[in-house]
Length: 425
Image (cartoon, rainbow, N blue to C red; front, side, top):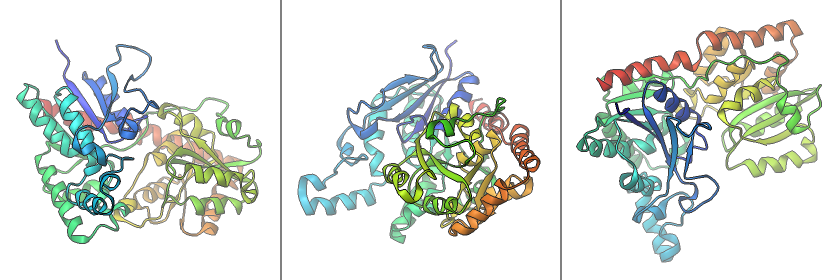
């Protein structure tokens, strides 16, 4: 019997994208043949990533990632491309801005064109984020004509139209974007999202048939080996007595990276280690070499999601010092938070990050601080790091226990798989 086919749509190169990979593996475990349909880097013949790869070494793996090159007339607006500015000078720049505004999201339309031309039809489309839902609905309609079920699940990974990303968008245009998203929601078969707070917000805002299903960004259960890994110190050359404060994830603006660096300088003997990727990576590596931060600031490349627990367990504390400057930030619960708990690494979170703060305070998993105040961040870090050894060991064990018992992927994915099974009947 032919397996049903699922496509997880990811509007980035998926190198890899951890949530998409976890969803894909879970669908494969439920009996689907799964493709992660991602974007070829650079939008052209960029050799940095293969156009196709399997999850794991087995050639028969049920999960394959394929990267599609933006095609057709919209390809000029793909990330890294010049659009019309390079062809028509100042006039082209004006047209380019108008197109970006009114053909939103123009930066992925070339990728959408490639998917419509090249992606085989599927029974289920899991659309990760706002840049994928429009094409998922088009693909599903074509799939139904081809005899497939063509179910669409919209995964709201961010409340992107309530975020800093749209802070400079004129209000009338932003209202139009929101109307477009609501129209996509009406056509989707189901909506899932990353936590209860966002699910409640969406249920109150959108014309959903039922409250969005919550699929937490939790990690699979993991137990640290004995002795605990020390990968970070080995990679960065940090002496064994120096405490490691870890920042995981995207390296860019509004991540609290400057404040975290200053806070660590206020500790007796600690280093900030940034493990990730993003537009600020080169800038942060320059800070590594700044004499003021010598031995106290290290930028390391991202690692595969399967390796993150061991690296995170190598840290003494994690920090999530994101400023809560938008609804999206206030309600966020990113991978780095759950990765810290999975590894048994206590965490300092910003005081206005309401979802994470509630968990940290209720379960006594770390400390809370003002992310804009390096002195207060340093105070929270000391609150964790300067505990008596027995108290600190108990704190680590609480993080592990709450992850094993409640906040793990095996538990979190259950309602999602039940939803998919119900939609497929």
